[in-house]
Amino acid sequence: MADQITNNSSGVPEDTNKPIMSSFDQSKLRELIRLMEKQQLSSDPVLSKRERDEAAEQQATHEFWNTQPVPKSIETIQKDGPLHPPLKPEEIRQDPYALPEGMVWCELDIERDSEMTELHELLLNHYVEDSDSMFRFSYSAEFLRWALMPPGFSKLWHVGVREAGTGVLLAFISGIPVDVMVRDRTMGMAEINFLCLHKSLRSQRLAPLLIKEVTRRVHQVGIFQAIYTAGRLLPKPVSTCRYFHRTLNPRKLMDTGFSKKLEGVQLLKLQAALRLPAQPGVAGLRAMRKGDVGQVRKLLNRQLKTRCEVAPVFKTDAEIAHWFLPRQGVIWTYVVEDAEHPGRVTDFVSFYSLPSSVLKAPSAQGGSGVRAKGVRKPPGAISKTASQQHAMVNAAYLFYYGTKTDYDVVLTAEEKAAAGGQKKEKALVKERVDALIKERLTELMRDALVMASAAQFDVFNCLDMMDNAMFTSELRFGPGDGFLRYYFFNYMARNVDASKVGFVMV
Ligand SMILES: CC(C)(COP(=O)(O)OP(=O)(O)OC[C@H]1O[C@@H](n2cnc3c(N)ncnc32)[C@H](O)[C@@H]1OP(=O)(O)O)[C@@H](O)C(=O)NCCC(=O)NCCS
Image 1 (cartoon, rainbow, N blue to C red):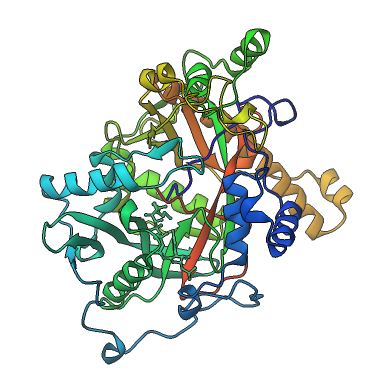
Image 2 (image 1 turned 45 degrees about the vertical axis):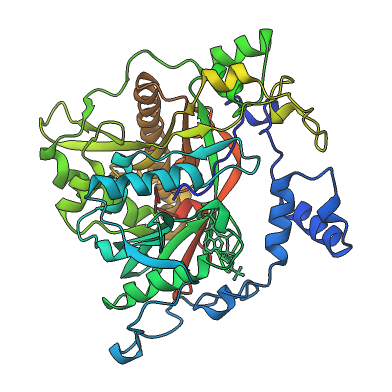
């Protein structure tokens, strides 16, 4: 899940363009915790809300999560494996968990337009916001259909809570089935997403009930592991990825407060630095079609298996067709067809659309990024013009890609002799393969940016997962201030480096 709205830098190299909120490193965090222990934190006006939230998360006692099969925050994991074995049928609770009076469980049948509208509106008004409440994710109904109805989905895992009297939808949590590779094991899991509570029902311990209820339903079909993501710190992430942003429409991002405001020469320089070619550069790039499905599946599974430690496994063509065939306004996938072998696909790249509503525009001084920490916005400083001008920031998010990973790199006899040993030869081959992949990915991603820009996206986002670090700096992505943490339910796994995460949650 893109669980975190993260503001961005303007897309120029890091040293000249710091993210709006400074990155939150561990030493600063420790210092904040120290401050908190002295009870200074809650009232400290120089800390941002995000910083206070993160420090509080570090201090949390996790009354709920401590009762669940997840590793403790302080636990050092030596060996991968489940925390408990599969439950026997008689150990699985049959009845739904009790809800507070006046609330009832429901399953959302999102194939019905009326129920899709209810879900869409709940998320539109109550789902994830950035820490300053300037933006809120705005998933379209078509997007939700795509995300929640892959092959094998069950509406029993689209769990809602309604107000008993009025039937108003108050909360939601979803699961979809997914096969997940974690290092050398592949397991059937539930991918849990879209946890959302009406704003009026926060801090009443309802989230644990939703989580327990969806878990119960997942257990009932014999699945005992889950994967989920959150921006916040819970016990205990298997990996932490950072958001990177590539500005496509600098003026709009500045107007909405998504990016730091620049003027005059600085702005002109930025625009020049961000200029993209008018047309894609990779020969044979075209939109994916039905006939490409099998080849895309092969490329993707091989890419994920050879380059990642945590990734989905796409077992059927139907899954690939669902997730990758272009859908207007939802998912864009381009393949590269080999000119010498018509019909043969050598690479592909995909991205999806996840706009954010602009809730309030930055102050007249030019956005949260230029306000000194602790200086409050003067009352009435909201720029009505900017917020009226732009209702949405149109963000494209990188989905999956695949490129030939089995490059034939053969060392010459001299190179072998110079390497002096098989281990070093292997390292040299890996270095060469990585260089080839880097070159190809950079070309592919440049074209993805060109296509996203042509489709009127304002910004292109990705995490520092997979091989993304190979192209982000060259293509002028800047680090954002948000992180996405990956978690497993009932599976302990040793920490996975961000670059080895190959699982995109929408
Ligand atoms: C996320 C949300 C449902 C949490 O609701 P809440 O009212 O703040 O929390 P509750 O009082 O009901 O429950 C608190 C418990 O839920 C846990 N929790 C909160 N958010 C969570 C999340 N995203 N994933 C897993 N657990 C979460 C807390 O850690 C806490 O458990 P703990 O005491 O063991 O730490 C609510 O804030 C919301 O709808 N936010 C907007 C949408 C959103 O951010 N969704 C999450 C995307 S990952």
